[in-house]
Amino acid sequence: MLLSLLAYLIGETNIPDTSYQTVDIELAKELLESGEYTLIDVRSQSEYDDEHIIGAHLIPCEELETRINELNKDKNYMIICRSGNRSKKACMILAAYGFKNILNIDGGIKKWYNTNEKVSKH
Image (cartoon, rainbow, N blue to C red; front, side, top):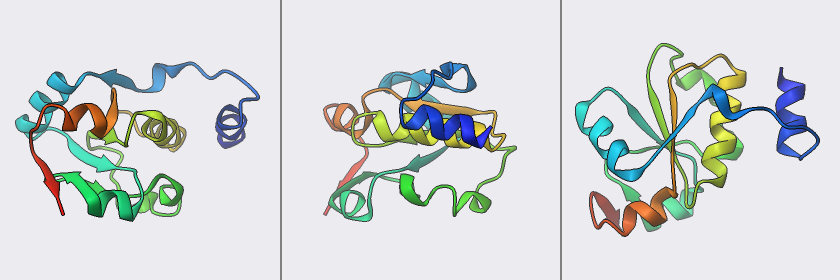
């Protein structure tokens, strides 16, 4: 399965996106407020330091596989990045490792920031 994921990431094949769902900002906010999901920010440390959603846990996309043991397969995770590309890759990685309850936030923090809600700027 990992080879399939790698092939997908470099554009060699098409893996269907059925292993996770993409949600819009409004639904993402509702689900986070419910406490049922943990938000994972997969941007870089410097991007996170510039601005991030309050309560988000930083695990940069390039570190996700080496830090996978920090996450629990039985929990629900919502993934965000700047615009949605890295979060989609992160969702595919999590799915390849057997995570089931994964949501990708459509539009990333750029779209979230436009709502002017729960963003910490440094």
